[in-house]
Image 1 (cartoon, one colour):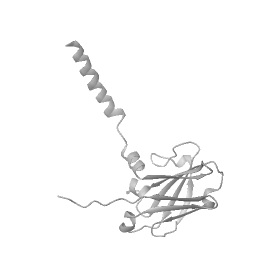
Image 2: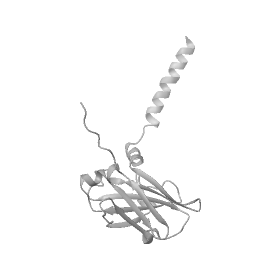
Image 3: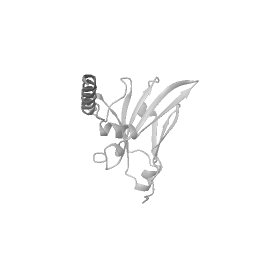
Image 4: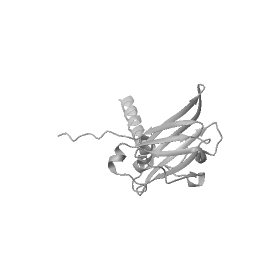
Length: 160
């Protein structure tokens, strides 16, 4: 009987700890679900990895006036990224502006996954709902290669 009591105490205290310390953050989960990764490989070697996050899906209350993408770049090539990069989205829309983000601007959503990455914020004109359902971001980097990030999602029909 004493062993059962100890096991029950252990289980219930463990569940209490789990609920408090391992509660997932909704914004972090949304960021993961709204992120896509691609890489450029030359001579069997990864030379650039890019993670694109569609911020409008992460926090639509903040990112709602335009289409915003967070671009994290990890590369062994040291180039002025914005001078070489060309962005476009599904509707052949060219980006309005792009800027690098720095550590003093980081928060729960805007941050890098490793200390060697660089972070950029890209903005496009607002697009209609149909184009958002077919949203793809294309990145062309002069003399290096192309990347495509597919943010499409399937709209499920309502079933009763």
